[in-house]
Length: 609
Figure 1 (cartoon, helix red, strand yellow):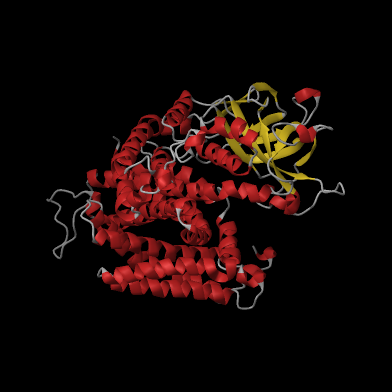
Figure 2: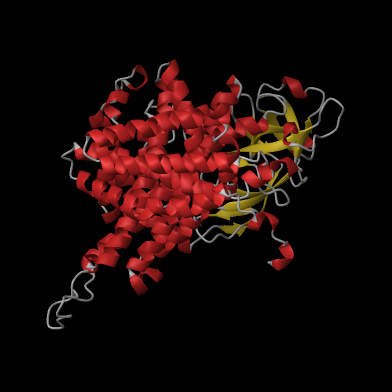
């Protein structure tokens, strides 16, 4: 077992068993085939595969990034080996129904296992998008679409993508120009769904072209015409289509090449193991059934594309947050190991330094401890938050009606925080890992510089901080007349009460004060009722609110640690004390700007920039 896996596995086991009470979840009928011993075996098997196939290849895929060759993508053989090992372990199917070939594993355990892979290599496999693609089709597709497309994706025979963005549109999806028109008179009678011809260009498509699987199932957003034949300029006219790389018949047998063409590769700062592509749909390079235009099959109803795609994006946002936290943890493990072995400097006493004494390990210096403790608080906190969100997904799926509704409300508020907080602060953890290692951290002899580069992409994956901040302050804080925020508030107050009962009353008081401050800032931001004023500083609200959420998570973990004799428990208490002492005070600077509706950035003349 590698240094990383040796450090990470006990952390996950503690969070699952001691904090999230996975055992009680496994008692539910859906998960009755599993027990804690079996989950432990799965995690250890995942850890072994992650070390052997992912971590060992992490530097290789960074140095030998995807190559564009005659319309194809060439990847190193290690990428195929990793894909095959992941599929062979059954991870793509893990949380899915037994009827679909799955294990019916709790999402909590499934996400925990995937943390092991993400930490081992943040840029190796397109499995996350493939699983999310299949999940969308299982939820919104026809029975034939589920059988032909989703099933083969979950078994690793085919891969999947999500194709949203375009060069001129970016995150403004109402501005996409990709179009879909009915494909002939019999378009509505195709057994795979209403058949359309899709034309347009998509940009920033992860895993848009490769040979890891026999087919690639693209889920493509495109505009369809209304009854009057015109295309709605808003997002209302956006529909979702299954556009396979190779056409298939009603039984899933591969046929001719669809009109989907790789235009080029985007050469990224990090995450180089996954090809990032520009794709052209329907440019006439290929002529399926003798005509130009990519053949696509409508998913659900016309105009319902964004709602359906968000089914995939919200799950992906939790996965992105966990992936960012996993990379933060990878840097933490590497820099901690280095700091324990590297000897440098001597203690400064009242009498000064004694040059005759041996140098001490870096980990003995107070400022190095600070940087390591910050990494621990960021990365383990991010993992805990992500797994808590996964636990809410399980509660939605298997709890009684009231519990499921409450979990859904809390998840609405937490999702933008899970995605953005972890991707921002676990990148900071990677930066601190480089700093701990000094000059060595900046070299490719050690992995921490690559962890930073790989993690930097997570800040924009599945929506930037600005978008997540607008979602949180502009929508989620107001959703259901504040009922979603109140659902989370009840959990925060419950944690504070348990903390007081457990001798952590000082921290409980600080948490309640911080929560009150954050909610008050949101109210002050909306005091004028003007969205332009309220949302100008939404990202700062996201930062402040996110820190309050993490303080709650850490205190909740600490309450369990107080009563635990697990070897991980003392470290969890130390991380909680760090977060409350060093991090939570930062919220006032951010939230003060939000509360006073600071107008500088809103009103600044762009000519002054």
